[in-house]
Image 1 (cartoon, rainbow, N blue to C red):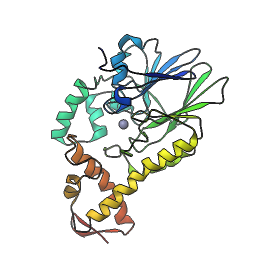
Image 2 (image 1 turned 120 degrees about the vertical axis):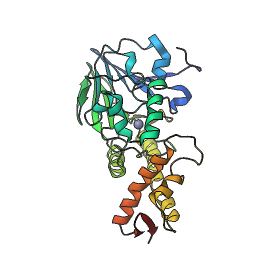
Image 3 (image 1 turned 60 degrees about the vertical axis):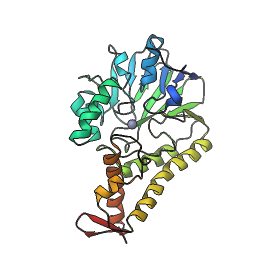
Amino acid sequence: MNATAPLDDRPIGPVTVLFGADGGKYPDGNSLLVRGGAETLIVDPALGVVARGDAVAGVDRVVNSHCHEDHVAGNHRFPDVPWHLPAADAAGITSLDHMMAIYGFDAGIDRAFRKVLVEQFHYHPRPDPESFSDGHVFDLGGVRMRAVHTPGHTRGHTCFRISWDGSGDEILYLGDIDLSGFGPYYGDAWSNLEDFERSIEKVREIDVRYYATFHHIGVVEGHAAFSERLDRFAARIGQCEAALLEFLAEPRSLDDIGKHSFIYRPNSGVIFAEPVERRSMGQHVARLIDQGRVDEVEPGRYRTV
Ligand SMILES: [Zn+2]
């Protein structure tokens, strides 16, 4: 299989960032090849890894930051090596049914998205994933990759802090804390807004030289630049909440909220836009009720206080 455009690689110490098409814009993403003295890992093999074909070889393990379609799209290219997933997400790779539970779509969208997973993202189940938890270190021989559990996007979502002998430089791989203009995604059954907010604060404390994301941004150098992008990324949460409070000037139901465009642009064509809007903003509604800023004025209808 050939890519439609040349895909770039960027070496940083023992890590090579394998950029996806369009700078790793969804459905593609940026994967990491991490080479130690004893072993080589690939992190989040994306569609761009599938497109590279045999050019990506010599991989001893696959490590996924979480179990989403775009992050596991290239796992099948490495059928004979262990696949490691965060413990809380590992079930998703064992069967398509388990995978669909992570998203939690209703029947119609579930059916359509299963097809997308298999046909566009090469979803291949595997009964024997190896799981890891927060603090686990993959020791590749002179190169170490430590798991930093950052739930919220999914239950298991994990960042990786990579260090190597002979250098004070480190890389923090952020997965889908992707610093994009889209902002944090917390619209799945296995997502959680407040966990995501805590995870943003957790990564903010990590001061390393390089930060790598799966989508769009690619590599950011220096903690100041990272922190500034992280602020802009995190600000989307407050912007969505402010838009919701405005929308709830009149009583609205969760169905009304699902049909309104807080997260996606109107007419985005995204097949799961409505349930994602509803689930994401539903978490804001629950929180705003707790804070006394929104009232349930009649059963199932909410209004700003
Ligand atoms: Zn994801």
